Length: 387
Image 1: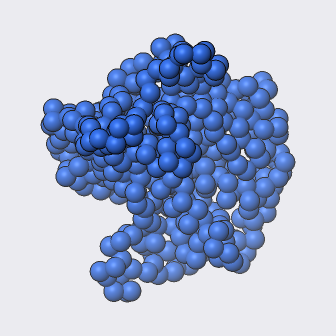
Image 2 (image 1 turned 45 degrees about the horizontal axis):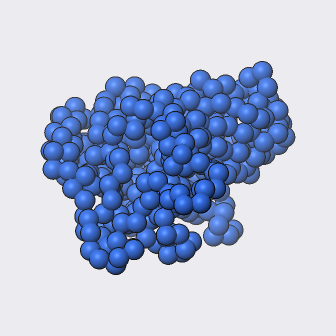
């Protein structure tokens, strides 16, 4: 199972093609649109989220509410395209015309300068339009499709914000449905109401200063069977694949599982999860410090992934840069930006992780139809039970 995305932040649409989904999976636009709406929410978002109302449209692979087994093609239109049609049009410029809104002062922290040098583009808009975090819209859409597959097998995905700037929320051990309910009601996706108020104040202060804030987000996946992923090759380890996918999200700079970096200061007896057995339940871990993974494979305990998002690079109080035409120092060009996108990043993390888990699920139990996969899954559960 794989997908490709295409499109620019101010282009006509964002497109994704998903290959490898089984036939007969119930699939409508509603759950995908729900995830897209979640991505657009959150305290600290910029004006772009007031313009766009992201909704998916299937243009292949879905008929009468079910997948057919063919590649699923989906698009999300950019409502702002009407204001950028001449600037971002595909048609060649006429003689004497100059590109509108040309980008020639790269923004520190963005792909602008590196991409301009790599692709020999003197208008760095050709870089920023694709490297923009707007691309995560269709990654969330693909993750939402993956969630529909996982839900058929009782696998649930949730997320929360643990830190924004210097404000840290108290992490609570909650049933996953309660975690989902509470974080959906929070404008910064936390369960800690006291921290919520301080986070909002910190975002307001950063906005007033023309600055931005980053943070830490967490994803939890509950209900995975033991044995997704593999120990036999480096690129089949599921925790490694999740880590790669997570740090590929724009502005994400680090990832950990379970207790993560805290393990460096603890003795082994305080790090590893003891194994227990109980009739009717089978093998399980007495704790979950490993975050649901051992040897690159799921243990059957909840997957717990945390990630660091740096402050957004576009500042209204712009940093110093160099004009690529004159080579003289200038302040960087400013595009529309969020003050803080950490709550949205929590949603993006959920859906990126969901995709990787679903991909590993299909590798383990794959078939051409949902019914074939279910039979494979049930046979495996019997095998594990009888071990």
